[in-house]
Length: 365
Image (cartoon, rainbow, N blue to C red):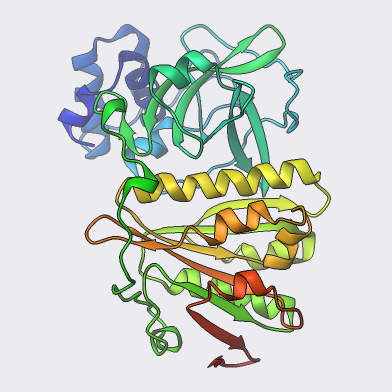
């Protein structure tokens, strides 16, 4: 990070970054001193301080290291607490030391009953934390926003206390009044070509803003193909959706690179699966509103139909997202479809149909 970017951080965020970087006694230093030492350590001009004892260190097992968010593009994370993933707020109380900041990176969910949550993922499991509505209103948050937040222990629950970053924008640069609306961006006929590192995908001339349906009779091969497609695509923003995870296919998903996962275990409740799909749908909209090009992979439609009612609202909302714009982003969707059962309503939205064979892909129609 540059000196200018560091100056934008609050003193609390800066202290946490300094602690993670290896600055000695960050709480005793002024903002300018912290910035100077962070830069010196990052450039190798000064060695990071390593404590000889555990005294003064923040408790483990709760926070996402802020330094990873601020100083790299790698948003993978682990070591979240094993709190309840239900909507109840009887969550385990965690210890907090004075002046220690605990941070989480996750997605905003706003429900119709004037309540909100921050969802985080660890080892293919989602957990939620209470998000006060005054923060939702203060920053004009929407479901699907990705935020870096400070959390605290309040009575018997873990709650979001403050927000450092919204959709990769530092809070000091964030303007809540300049947010775009997904439905107000004019759609155009798809014309921008998706590019892949693997020529087996380039041969089909897939376009941004298209719905591409994939048909295969082997579930493992289907998953491997769509993972290969995601990894090969040159688009930065990628979303993978799967609400029927079992232990055997988690090994396959381990091969995914640089994708945001919206997944649910096959043993999870239908309500949780529905909420995760809705969260993914809203996340895709937020990315598009930020002028991003997004590739969405749904693995698979039949699993989604198992959690939907007969009108298929979750599937309809997701499948209808595909969109291209003149200069401000696009959404392309690839979905594994049932090989032996046509869903007529969805078939009408297909731009291309691809058959997954053992070692090849074939264009249908």
